[in-house]
Image 1 (cartoon, rainbow, N blue to C red):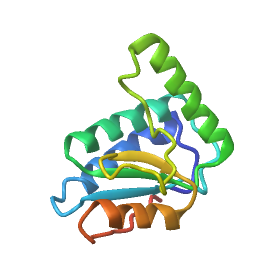
Image 2 (cartoon, rainbow, N blue to C red):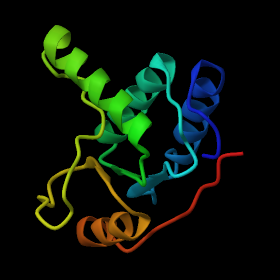
Image 3 (cartoon, rainbow, N blue to C red):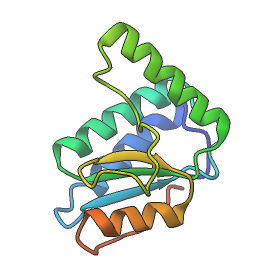
Length: 133
C-alpha cells in the first residue's frame, strides 16, 4: 500500500485482500508498510479482520517495514484489546525472526528481506507480490 490505512481506504484494502486470498495457491502474504505513515481505528479494525480471515485460511500474514507511528497505533490497539477483550484480536505481535517459532502465522518484522526469509521458512516457496493502488 502507498497511502494511509484509514476509514476512507480500509474497505478497499479488505476487499482486495479478500479477493487476493480467494486463490488457493496463496500460502503467505507480506504487507509492505514502508509507505504507510498513518492508520486510524477503522484501518486497525480492518487489519484485524483481514488477519483473522487469513488465520482461518491458514495463510501466513507478515507486516514488514512498519513505521514507528503505525507500530505505536498497533501497540495501543493491542493493549486496548488485551484490557477490554481478553486479547482475542491482537494485530501483528512484534516477532524477532531469528527467534521466531515456525508455528506463528502472523507477525511483524523490520524489513522486507526478513519477511521473505520468514515466508521461505514457513511455507511452500510460492511468493506473490500485490500492489495496492
